[in-house]
Length: 135
Picture 1: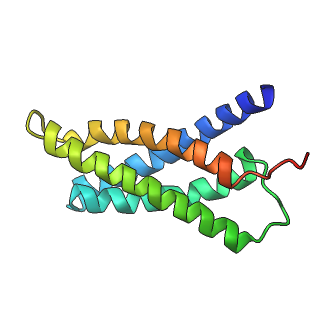
Picture 2: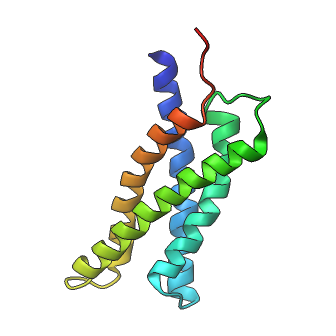
């Protein structure tokens, strides 16, 4: 149980860092570069996935150091693409709905989308990325 709690804390710290990378790039692309919110969200999410992969396999999850790194990365990317799909669906629905009531709704929606995707990411990566203990 202590190991799981420590892992959740590490995952949270990595997620927090990656959120700021994701959110910072999102806002910069929309506000400074004039990107559409969904295109910017896809770009920022992708950058944060790469950082998240590196930190997840080195700091958070007990991965098999002898595993095929390409296969491991492909699994991580597939799981992340599912997360991106969830992110984009929430961003689209949230911006369409909340945008009726406020400017820059994407900023608020992104926080909610990140929370949902973070839960999905922890569960899916724990299931598919972490080394299985042989009993």
